[in-house]
Image (tube, rainbow over all chains, first blue to last red; front, top):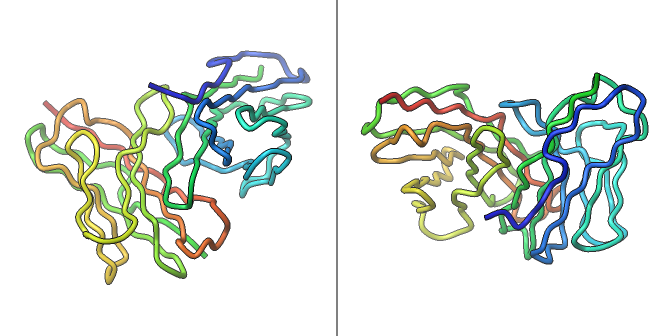
Length: 113
Length: 116
């Protein structure tokens, strides 16, 4: 049922590698978000975008970066992965006004060895 | 500043019994309020929202929520719990006045266990 897709679903990789987590949505939503969530715990907003060429840092400091070149695509990049980056990363999007809910992807579970 | 509190880390209920998951909020203006559910290894799934109007909001899977402005609460309810309702539930708020832009503030989550 998801119209927002995240790849990969799981990634185990060594320290120091460059990683890009992909997120795409087919709903034409202008707003997109990245959250970090340790499994079963609260969400922390790390990046958001209100449209193409618009990106902002969220409430939780993150060493990751994002880009929004196309409406449907909002990738997140870690230039040099560290064990502290081990977590689940959730992408979401929303459209319309502030009363619209967010639609979430199923997440990428990242493990840095 | 906007905030959301879910005072219970965990709620346990027997199948067939009514359930309530509590949520209180704080915003400077009027709120948009949301409930989401998360199953293991999945993203959050939207259940219901309050915008304006009737204080009792009905949503997916038989869930409903009651908005109480004086108590600044938005508790999630279901008349008869199912084992399959066991999951993690998140309450969320956004200020209608647009304070903080379109950022949604999520509660810390409440784990619901429904025992057969």
